[in-house]
Length: 297
Image (cartoon, rainbow, N blue to C red):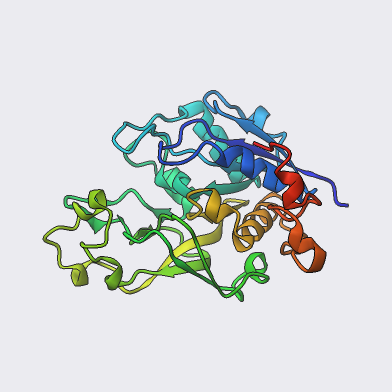
């Protein structure tokens, strides 16, 4: 068994439509592989280079807003500069779901946008009808680019999410991004009669066919470099239902391992024969029946 990789899961403030179960589930998932040792911090403010030097990678599940209408609450200059220096000098970084949304508390932070690789902070005057927008569907077919990177070489070519978010038409700021998975942004998805009402309000009176990038492929998982550091970005995985899909479990574990070490040794979850009775995250030897008798989060 290879030496365990140390991961710091940075969280604390995530918009309130996201369940707080995600952080302990992510830690349990990563540690179940036997490859990681995970610490969780809910207060990254004041973090220094000395703190981050103990870790092979940071895993960021933080968007800095208590709800979608609230102002950003950032980490502050000390922690932000420590993070950028850490990754630039070779530290691994995983950006998870709404962490792509620039949670530094400023309207535009060039360094954080470069860390993400795409700019998701481009809302137009008409809200979701311009700039970055949310596709109004809730379930999506994920198209895996299996030949693009070893991280996803073991995944199914197409698989479904559950109760998901997909953000479209972000501006690519790093030309050297490798896309590992994408979603088709179909114009048929923008049917006002089937949208959630709070989403439909942003599209009333809009000609959906004129929206930029419509009917194109939207990157939802990608990798790139930030200085010497490896960055794995997973813009999907809104909640536990998608997290527990074997394709997502595999991709997150393998992507985190790659970011932390440059290697990929974690296999796709083995759920064949008797192991089909094993409970998520499938890397352990606990059956569903045994899982029902204990509480893991």
